[in-house]
Image 1 (cartoon, rainbow, N blue to C red):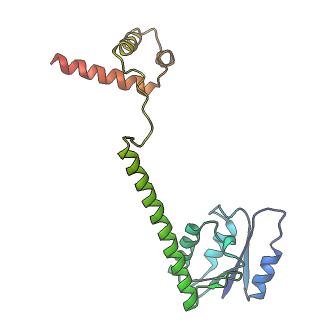
Image 2 (image 1 turned 90 degrees about the horizontal axis):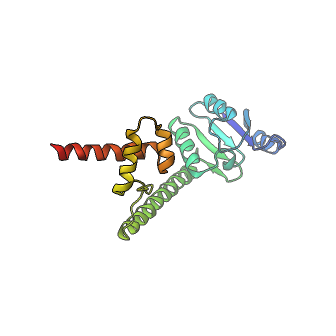
Image 3 (image 1 turned 90 degrees about the vertical axis):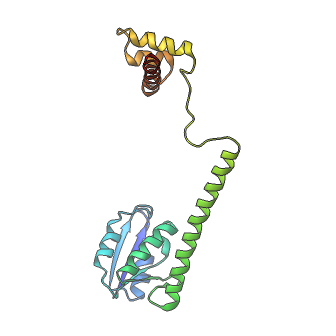
Length: 195
């Protein structure tokens, strides 16, 4: 059984072109959405996927009506393939119920995996180049209380219980976690020196 799926992005657009093409292709039932393709929780698509049975084919006018990214399309195609459901695109002449359509599906999968590998390789090369120049990744840490004088001011402000933590942090220009980190590290160092 052929099940159609049509999607338009805006409410003022009409799905008539798609539904007419799907009806002409022999779809016995057509599900529709009026939502962006980036959303994965489209009610019409969810309903169509629930309706499909092994041996059925999900038919779309164009692949971009089904998914907005290659990753999203490959995931959906894998899901359909695992359930024994074919996918047909009328405009791109893709039909995974045929041997040549299965080949195209595998080429899509290989291209998506190749793209992921390239991104991973470029990221790794960029990080290695940055490390070679002495740069480290992550958020740069501001050393606001790195001098003994600043640390002594922080300790005296903290020791005076009339000062709130918010006031101390604002006066020193540090966050609460930075203040506690420096106070705790200095206290631990003082305790270690005393023993």
